[in-house]
Length: 209
Image (cartoon, rainbow, N blue to C red; front, side):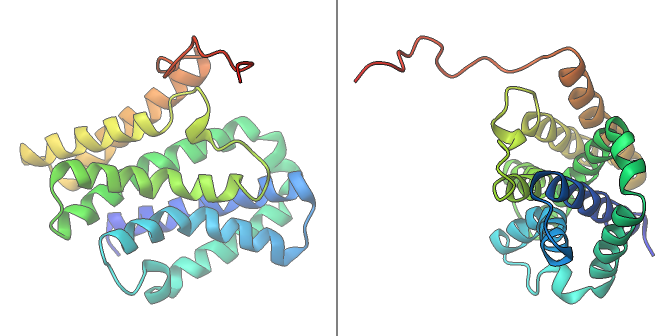
């Protein structure tokens, strides 16, 4: 199996664990509920990307290994639930690595389907962040996409770097390593240092009629 494929399986598993932990912490659902949230977290972004670029059947439909990765991750989340909660900071690191990998994978797939570089980077961002949005809505969380911390912007930056490295003939393994590292570092630094983009408007009177 290729590096690209192995990374996709690994990222899918990380996102499924993240979804399962958030679901259980918020609403204490049964196995079906936890599995459903883990499922949409891990395949949501990639499915939206595939529908937009008309890649059918969807990746999880045609590849049963992605489903196995999700189910294995849900079981691991159950078996090691307390340990994983204690490692919440590490899980943040894992999820950050997941969005980094999915950004580059999504960007590469969009290019393969003939999209222009700008749209390919946007598709890479969708691959990375939309699963988290679909997870946060039913668990009554404000999606990270709408919080002040740098999230989707880091993915776009990594996507553009990946496109630049492609242009200069950089090999895929090196491209993934460098571009994913940029996303990883931007995300970690923005959270640790409380960095954010400027507000759209800061002078709006919310009490006005």
